[in-house]
Image 1 (cartoon, rainbow, N blue to C red):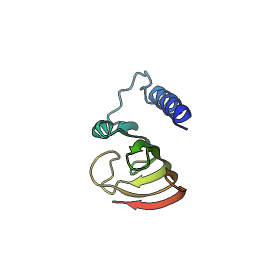
Image 2 (cartoon, rainbow, N blue to C red):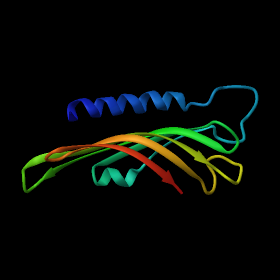
Image 3 (cartoon, rainbow, N blue to C red):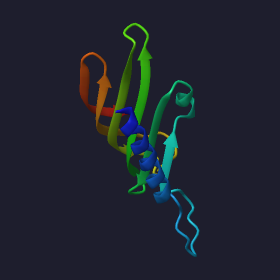
Amino acid sequence: MTSTIRPLCAALLFLLAGLALPAHSQEARTSHQQVISANPFGLLLEFFNAEYERGVSRTGTMGVGGSFASYEDELTDRDERYFNVDAFYRYYPQGTVFSGWNFGVKLGEGEIDVIPTIRLVNVGFKF
């Protein structure tokens, strides 16, 4: 699974990076319409996560995100993996997306590859 998930994640980030490039126009935009974010501190712990978020209105955004981690269990001498993907909606009550407080909902799916493999369906709220 590791041999297929890493190239897939790299390809997904490459495609999302292309979507995030600003269009050249005569009018300058005053605010961002999309954001790609990742956690650089997670890389120190071999935990990778990223999100792509796009403004859909003055006060709301929609996006997708995902996480991946792989650890070797020293007791059982086997690799344990975790991954998840989710889609979310965030509401910014102050009226400016990507700025200030937000809350929202998310729905996703994940898997923890331990003995036995655990599949998860995630429904959550974010504040």
